[in-house]
Length: 50
Image (cartoon, rainbow, N blue to C red):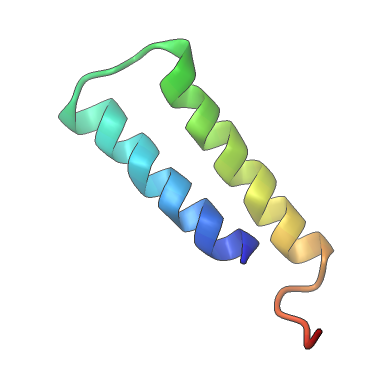
């Protein structure tokens, strides 16, 4: 779940940074959240059976 969230956030960040030329603080928050999501994915052990 966190890995999918990270991928979506990175894609949104790249789109906002390159296509729309948004270089404000908020677009970089997407990158920060993506990195946090990737870290959470590896800390929690990836996919687990619930």
